[in-house]
Image (cartoon, rainbow, N blue to C red; front, side, top):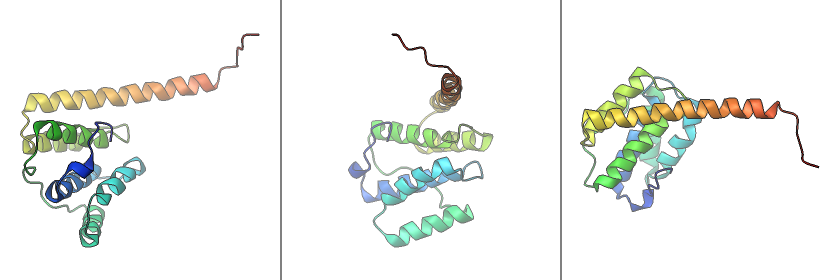
Amino acid sequence: MLTGLQPEILNEQQKTWFAVAVCHAIVADGNIDPSELSYLEQALSFLSSKTQVDSLVQAVKDQKLPKLDKFPLATRELEVKIFIELALITTADDVISTREIDFLMNVGRILGFGREFAKVLIRWASEGIIWRNKMHKIIDSGVELHPEYIT
């Protein structure tokens, strides 16, 4: 995970909450983009019960996920890292929809963050989309260049 979040430090309740939250992030815009599937696989790998995994997979397919309640007892640092990971997932397809912003605002409240902090995180995630799009343009233009080797 990009934030350094290590799922093995989470207890079972936290792993379940995080897996459900990841599923919410993936379906927040109403579409499951192929770029989000690796996050889904990773989230499901946190769960120890095949029944839980099967249930969540079906909930994602049906887009009827369990409600997210307060995150089980954790440090503030862990909550921040989880919030960032969820923002990264919502922008994995290089788009952030109104529904994804609503999801992030809601999960921010669930994690105990105020509107301003949530807005800062959403702005940061949006800037990441711009940065990645520019990177793709640089790659495309670099590929078209003829080599200019020093002899």
